[in-house]
Image 1 (cartoon, rainbow, N blue to C red):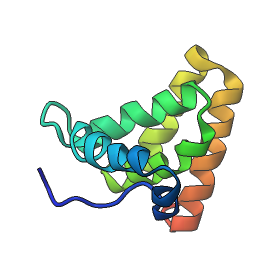
Image 2 (cartoon, rainbow, N blue to C red):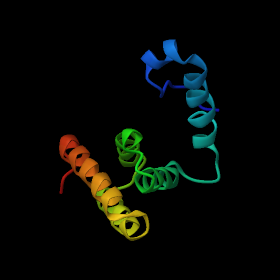
Image 3 (cartoon, one colour):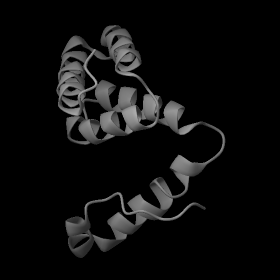
Length: 110
């Protein structure tokens, strides 16, 4: 397994240490590192699932991670546009607004 990094916010570790441990060691240390899918593909799946389920609190983190994992802003726009017809317009509009803000703040706007 690669070097462990803390993903869950440190402040949560004092409040919910087991949840933070599971997040860091199992979710990001094992599941995200499995060889069957690339980090890029895992990010695409995660972002579209979070958007479809309207899990907006986690979406920003995973949009940033998706960009770090090699997805382009244009690919994410296309994925979110596609899911609008399956997951609902409000979900897609919320996700695209978050993505726009992240892309602009990171200087990746084309």
